[in-house]
Image 1: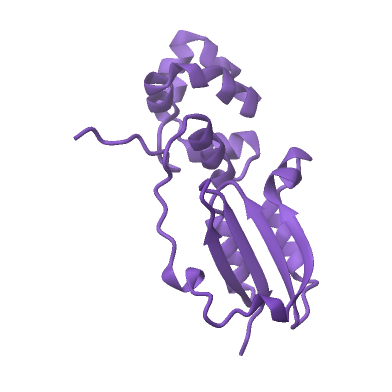
Image 2: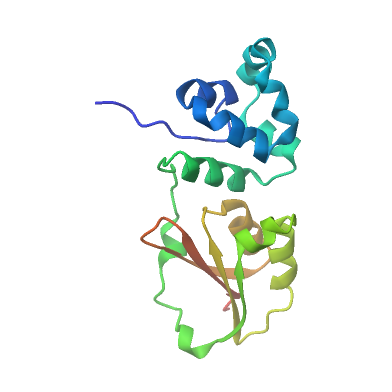
Length: 173
């Protein structure tokens, strides 16, 4: 049985380019400083040691966003383990909440903003009877973990197209 290629933060750029040569130009568009990949000598040296995580840092992107974009572009399944408590909607009666805001991660990142910072900033405005809904084409685990650490409840729904709808509220005590 052939193992499916999965992109993780530790995946080397070289491995992606070898397996999917058509992604090289797309990767350079995402991270312009990777223009050096056009040089075969530099590609063999830089790409063989540079990981997706390092590419995200160099490109000023969030790691989940870069993995999500590349996985979607290459039509790859993401290796994601969603904690069961994030999927449990038993104590969420969404009709009891006012939607303060509905945010699309792509809209934020298309404007060049860091979605993590923008969304965490918006969460500070939430009151007890309000929710913020986030639509994302990737699983934003860093954002979810930061929101939980900051005292918010999170409900996550995986959509049929492998995108996510995430609900945030002030923690119910």
